[in-house]
Length: 328
Image 1 (cartoon, rainbow, N blue to C red):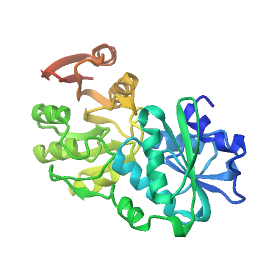
Image 2: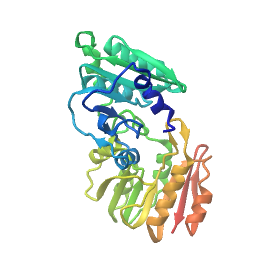
Image 3: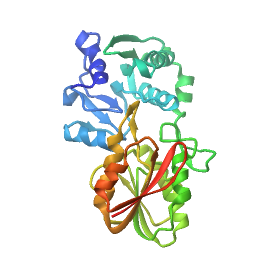
Image 4: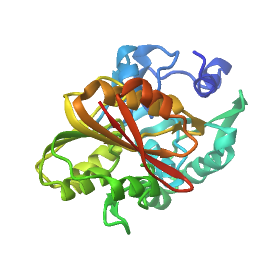
């Protein structure tokens, strides 16, 4: 196990500060970890990581209930992680423990103080430039009003864009300017298409409204929290929703594909994600099919597209983004 977050999360057990409970603990935002399989049930809304947990024979959990311990890897976005901390506290049985781990670069001390504010006291250990911290759930010490308020922080809500969204999903409270640039230049499509990395459904909504000749549009999205919103944002019967990893084989053959692919995970640039999206699109398009994508100008996608497609064109650009079109 080379993940320093997971190594640090396990420090309290190695140090003797904590023991595994007799019945399984809940692991929120779980990743495959070097821990006994019978000690954990895992929850993960990101499909690639969910699939990795399943392949590693971890039990998956998608319901409520109280647990003797809840492990959590808080995300970066403040409202989202505070809501997750509140949920971890409410799903821990009295006398149980909430254990979290955060990188120092991503505000470990701030998140630790937030858990302390909810629970009254915390303990912590640091290593690998990460911090593990935990709180024992004593009902008379809990800040119940704040727990209730924080639990609602990432609830879906209608934002100024007109779409239903929530903290933590991509561009949650605004229309991403890259997506807007692609939307402004997309032609009228026809036939069966796909939106890779569809998010809350903005590009799919634009395409469906502008193209009555589309017969079906598959929204491919790896983050279940975003896909659930897309289902609520699009009431067009031509939209089909797939909780799936767009870097893997796609569910059909397509006349067109659109995409604003991700290019980072947490703080790390991941050019390979966009490159994998390009290769997936090329494999799934019919001969003559079109692939339209938007990307930050500095990202080196043209060579990947040239290797995968018969022809590519630069359709539009500005000081931040470029729109590229490829023909199978």
